[in-house]
Length: 260
Image (cartoon, rainbow, N blue to C red; front, side):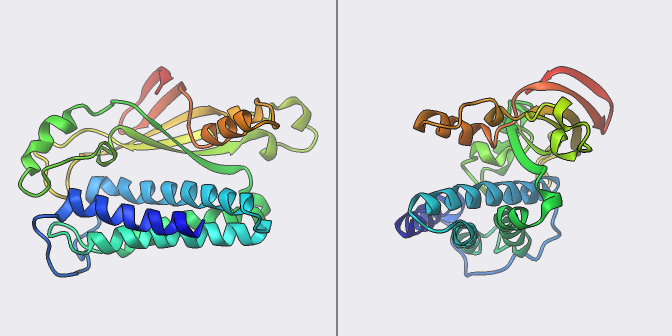
């Protein structure tokens, strides 16, 4: 697990260097601009990937023989090392810089599994994501930024990423109702960057944020608990929000029979 941490640190450094500032490195600096990149959806993404990264790292440490409580701590610390490596490399990018808010969002997400383990009222609250081509114009208009950032990675398109907070309805129900509420059913609130800006600027790429209400199916609750294949599938589906009916409540109301 220590080797994996070092590998992620080195890999993230090489990736960010290549895609952000390989030919135009500046001296290390902090990002002091107003936090408005992608309507701040990048902060949501940093939180989610910190949450997911620390959770998976914790599983790895438990597989390696670490005790339960210690594995959650080590997972959160491993996530912080990786997040720090990414932000440190951003600190040399001319159009960016080390963002304390990005790092803080990732750190909070990384410690969430540990806090959730010990704080009872957080147990029903989990986080997932879904990805679909909601904002294809982003890739057409990104050429306006070619001089600053010649390569755009799919993860930069926050219009395609919907992040969900899910609340397990059985865990929230009164004790007398629990037997009649499915353990796999949750209520979900999702957000994504909405419409692509007519003229994309470095920090202003989207014009609004879309908010959705939906249901979530916890597939992990429906799969067998024993066996390597089922364990892998349970882990993968733990973080992915399956297509489901949804209602968009902002910036305008729309109904989706199946939101991807």
